Image (cartoon, rainbow, N blue to C red; front, side):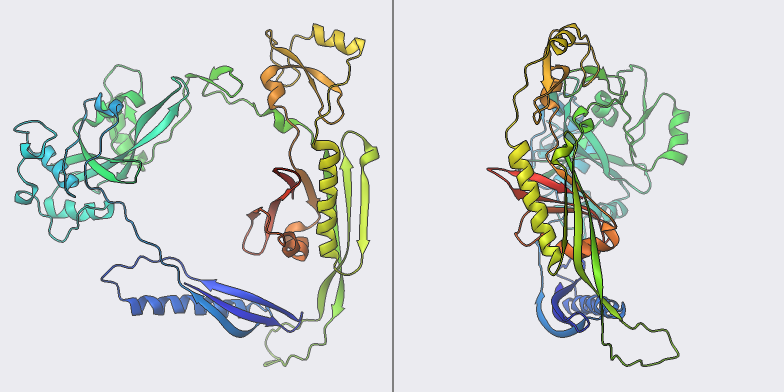
Length: 490
């Protein structure tokens, strides 16, 4: 629920729409709607009072509208049959019951409790769940949060694991791994069952019975052939039972920490390296930006004729004396490759925040059209440059040996030769597609002066906020040609 109100600030003579919202709540058939509405009203009322008490100066004129957002609640449920991936079937550690009802969970429990009289994945091979299990008060298909209730009613402990697809960098194939637990029992009982929760592309879910958890996940644990002692809480293994017991007593938080292995993997340049060795490979990040802008804003203080009455002069109070009016700005465009293209801009006058944004965007557009739109061809190499290039043994970008794929790397703005490079290094070594704007006191002050003018044309803006009112940085994309290009990053 979100309430919108129309506010007026007499000290600045501004009108604006403010809103106060509540978090989402799950409403079931048994929920008391009246109580929920009263709870929402209390939350909004408290937020509105808090806003008014923060010396904001805003006065509520009238309510604009009340917005109620209702989303369909779709809890995690599992029901009818879904095929297992062939890779999991080949491990022969999971029984996938072919049910045609909403009770795959119950059929899995029956598969764990009873030896099948026929084929293990056929429901007729087991007693009917209704003759064995207590499902009173439990809705099927069952949700993960209802499993605890089922455990208590049937004196059975249950863990539920998931299945996730990932890309194996070593085999260059898509593979599956067991994740979880999605549900972990509070206390392991004499009858304990492990289940696998799978899904299809349509979002349907289905429970399977894990007949051998160690066998199911052994492939993703280790190539070590000795006996493994498996922790069901985080799916880590240990080589002795004592280590497992210590882990279960002190270390296990049902979270598995995946550390890089010593396997050989390929990076984006095709180089083979050990996965557990961290190396810098984003060489394009070390390229100097061609232009950077340094900017600052100044305001004048407009005296306010404040006639506010002080209710209690003996207590603390705030009196507004001045209004900050943006009046001037200055910025310096610094060129990294030729100082002749550096420039200084300044402005004094009204609407300086609008002029600032328009001037910045026009300069960014001019820089793009002049220097960045069309890459410049490489200048003819001098005799010295040609000799240096021919004799070079290492790439000037990654500093690794050149093995027959040497190319001449050049600056796309000046056309100057930069050095010998691998073909892949040369392709990825691109000019940054943004112009940084560095501002003095942006977070605490300056951004409030011009931020609204930055958003007038409905162009894409992304921010890194410190809180609702302060921004650490923000980016704006605007149209410069036949595609969108990032041009400013504060």
